[in-house]
Length: 345
Image 1 (cartoon, one colour):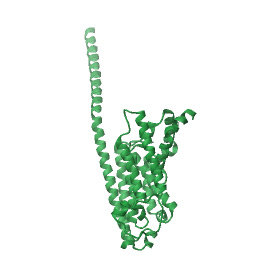
Image 2 (tube, one colour; image 1 turned 180 degrees about the vertical axis):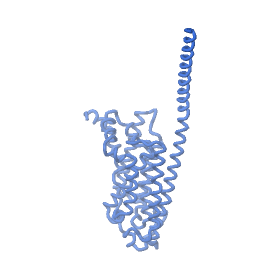
Image 3 (cartoon, one colour; image 1 turned 180 degrees about the horizontal axis):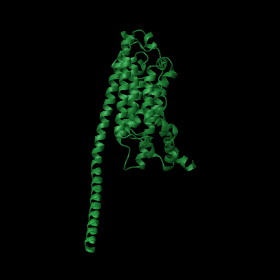
Image 4 (cartoon, helix red, strand yellow; image 1 turned 135 degrees about the vertical axis):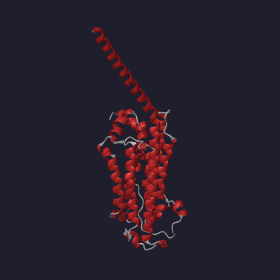
């Protein structure tokens, strides 16, 4: 890359790149086995925050990067700045990650499966779609100079890795495999007792969810852009998988994870009863989010059709006018040919 392009990239790339990369940075929490002395309450779940640098620093970088990005887009495109709704969605996604991994929820995630389930759902059903709604890739493209856009951003977007991971089929399968594979493999139990496994689990959840919601939201450019019918089908096919996973956990006849089983009944809650609560939370919450997203998508589809209807009607009017003109030309030509034949006789 020419030196001038590097200089231009350096003006805004550090904060933006570090901030956005922080979203895919495996989000970490400390796996622990100590059972808190007091039972969970709404107050200590929401207010019992602990500062965790490995979570707070990436989130702070992402926030600073977004602010720098918004300001740069505002300078370059004053007539079309970043919408406030995009910033609200982005910071809402960061807040969901912070609540999942630094509030009292994190304190109880290895003690109660039901709390752990809430933590995971915050990452995959709240943080990821909110970040996708912010359209971060679009904002990076708008903020980049032509050289940086063509030589770096678009090259990355068109790379084999991104094209493969961003393909809707791959994203759909990755999301399903991560959810099912983590819950029915040794990874989940290992994540309750080992920090590295815990890091990997949360990183996989967030990354796969970002990939899954990317084509659903459809605001950012993607390798295979889906139309509204395809997006609706994409969501509809994932809905029963989430429901069946929740039901599989809910109706299991024994504790699925040795870690929770060995804790006995903290706060008088047996491992199996807690597991059933976790399954019910996943089933109900997942259905609400997926059905809600599907309804929003259908409403957007209808608005899109209504906006396109006048233009489609105008195109149809032009086509009809052209057909009438062509028919008139043929009629005149036939009439002229008939007149010539009569004169010759």
